[in-house]
Length: 160
Image 1 (cartoon, helix red, strand yellow):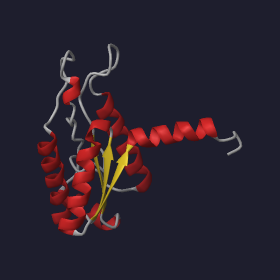
Image 2: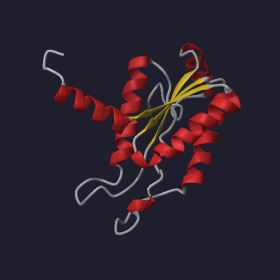
Image 3: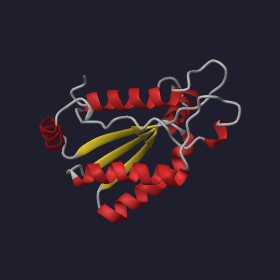
Image 4: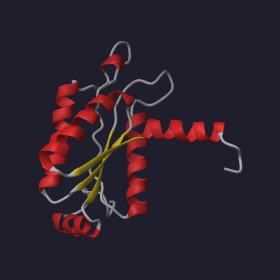
């Protein structure tokens, strides 16, 4: 049980967290897919879940349950266990999750993506949420953040 996880708390506690967080909620999603011969299929999902949970704890904001399956058709061939969703279905599913949160008073959604193949769908959802609801929805891509962090360490002097 996690006191910030929407799946672990009552709606009364969720309402309190919504009000205390100023309407901020994190929404993690990623993929279940083959990454090579050694990595578990859930690698992307585990990273998205862990990053989301740590960020939620640091900011004291709630987070939605992980959406594990993403857009991964390129991993179907020869990688048993891969789960993929058609992009238009993923867009509508993620959009409906966001709209559910918005209808319950969350006004600032942070979509935490752990899979590069989801990026085009996420941009679509972010635009639609903004224009359809007026809520603030931003996307956070773990891969982009990791690349930026690595590039900064490589390109900048150690004292920076």
